[in-house]
Length: 129
Image (cartoon, rainbow, N blue to C red; front, side, top):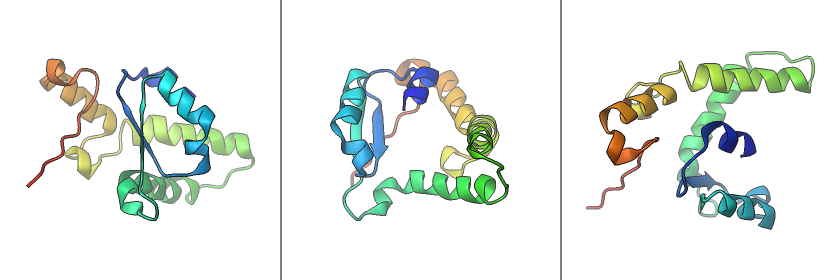
């Protein structure tokens, strides 16, 4: 989380979605979210569908990076994960949920087409029937 905050500098009000793991519900983590103006959002117990996007990312990470490589030590694993996420996944890999754009391309498109309505990021809109 510290690296993400440092790199992205999210504005207050950004939702931080996670499961209900002890690392996410502990007092220190929740205080860090509050300090940065982030809103905690958690999956309901025993409902993996609440966190489907994150689960999809982890499946992709395991299949396309971890299982496809052999690492000599933890440092090489760490470097491989960093490169996969920052260089490939966020900048090059196309995502169907983002109209077949990379996350970086999607954010750029949103900023160019609706800069005043959305600020520096994307906005999720929920529809009701």
